[in-house]
Length: 133
Image 1 (cartoon, rainbow, N blue to C red):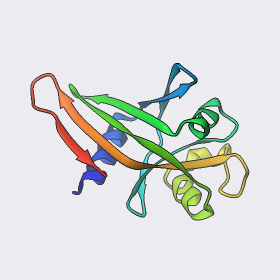
Image 2: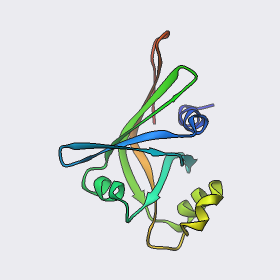
Image 3: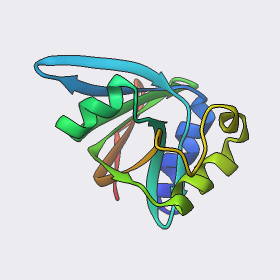
Image 4: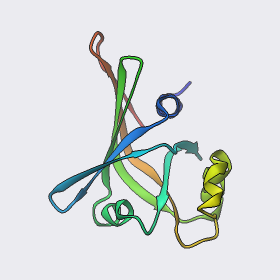
């Protein structure tokens, strides 16, 4: 399993992870649950009408933190919007429950991928492991 797949698998197993963005000088953190590897990139999903979308448009730097079984991950990088219908369709196919709220063809569905991503796997008992993608 390569690094990006390992990152995605860990986040999937967390079920819920937390995405941090900035709004001016104020950090904003909220729970997320969508993640996939598509065309070799790590993607998440949101709605363009949500504050998180506006925050990422103003400042694409973001971090994700997830925790499971005494271990955690921190993923950082810039989130880049991908407006292609194919990328949106892949996300909605992976998370079909979202299809009640989103469509690959609507003007609200947003998928973003990490550019210059770095993930650090850590625990209280072991040395951290860093993966770049």
